[in-house]
Amino acid sequence: MRPADRRSKILELVQQSARVTVDELAQDLDISRETVRRDLARLSEQGLLRKFHGGATTAPATQSAHESPLDERRATARLEKIRIGKRAAKLFEPGDSLLINCGTTTIFFAEQLAQYGPFTIMTNATPVAAEMWKAPQRGPVYLMGGSYYGDAFETLGAQVVEQIQRIHADHAVLAVGSVSSAGKIMDYSVDEAHVARAMTESARSITVLADSSKLNRNALLQICGPERIDRLITDKPVDAALESVLKLAGVEIIVADEEA
Image (cartoon, rainbow, N blue to C red):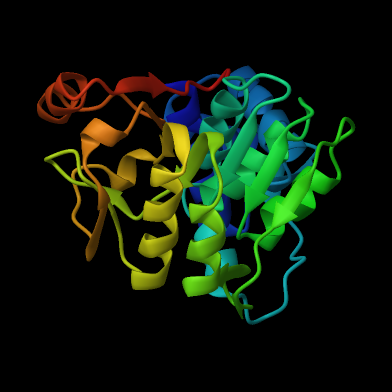
């Protein structure tokens, strides 16, 4: 079992039982107690659980009882998205200009990107703008105005699209709904698809961030075809059929491992 998969399983067991011991995890996963301790230490550092002597328990709740849809999505495939964000952040050079849309993976990406820079950031996502504003070497941060959707922490609509269309950025970094078996980049929301499509048309290079659960799936709307994409960053190797489609279109596939 890969280390990242093993940690995901440990986190799943902790969440199911609320409290587990090192011995229980070692027996359930057929691994050494020392390996369990190392994994618990790493998960604790990431705030995903709380360690105690001889075991671990769930992390203390910091959210309200009613989480927004974006908060709920952030909890899904969290470790995978963090790894993707870390790997993606290393691909850009200080001084680059980036269009970034709103999505759970792009928020994790912004948290990592803020450690580098400075960058010029243009986004419709308030969490992305907030993370980049905290960067030690902060560049200009532009939050595009439009209709605000508080449950998704983003602005959408014709005003946002018009602003994007006036921009000529070095890069667009996109969280997406899915990547189809034909390599099409897709989304479930009409308004979000319009914003993402505008970003693909207003940047020199396009990077798509998608964890493996989004691959070989269809969504409601096509953002663009694979020929428009320069890089796909995901958390697991892509199956041979989709890999062939993407490589034929000139897409670089980057797999973010646990050390990303």
